[in-house]
Image (cartoon, rainbow, N blue to C red; front, side):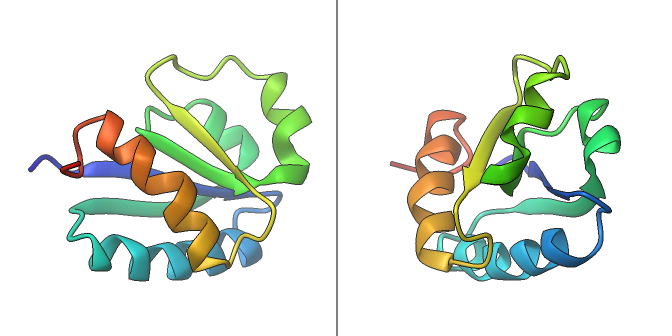
Length: 102
C-alpha cells in the first residue's frame, strides 16, 4: 500500500493539531494505514500537497479563502480529539483514495 500524507491543521500549528494527530495515529494503526503525519498552521497547509487535511470545524471559513489542490480532501472535525469522529470521517476518505481496503 502506498503511504498517505495527512496534515493536521490549527491556528498556530502546535497545540490542537498535535492533539488531533495523536488521536488519529491510534485510528490509523487500528486500520493498518501507512501514513506520513505532520501538524502545521493554516497558511502552510494551504500550499501543501497533502492527500488529506484534518482540522477543526471553526477553521472552515478560513480554508474557503485558499485554493487547496483538488486532490486534497479536507475533513472538518467538531471534536478534534474524538477517535470515533476521526474514524467515521477519515476512513471512508482513505478507502475512496485507495489507502485502505473497503
